[in-house]
Amino acid sequence: MSKQKQNFYDLYTKVIGQGEIDLLPLYAAEPCIEHSVGVHDGLEGFKNFFIPFFEVFPKRNIQVTRILEDGNFVFAHAYQVLNDGAAEWMTMDIVYTNADEKIIEHWDTIAPPLPERIKPVTLPLMVQQN
Image 1 (tube, one colour):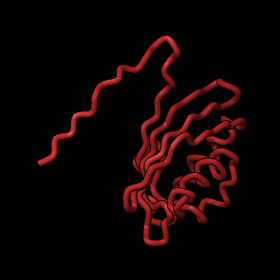
Image 2 (cartoon, rainbow, N blue to C red):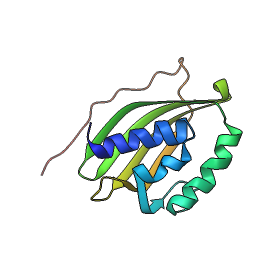
Image 3 (cartoon, helix red, strand yellow):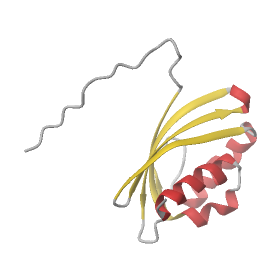
Image 4 (cartoon, one colour):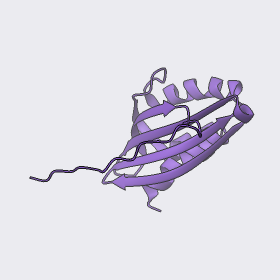
């Protein structure tokens, strides 16, 4: 696994999943631009969001299900079960990394998982090349 993919994986599983907030500088660096609602820019903004999050959700089971990369971008999909099912989310994250392969910008989408009774529609991917 590349260093930038490993940095994302470790940030998600160790910093967020295990609550090891002091490890954050190993995986992310300033300016750490954040596009998630409620999370402020910078490493301190990240910490200020997640420290209370850890208190509200002390039990966190986070499984990163796939990680892809393209240049300095890393794309990841994760499944999160918080407080033994009190909250359950599927997330899609995109991060941009610096020359040291540390995360310096982050975007995400968060949604509840689809119930088993709802089947996703599979459509052919249409890509037109010029």
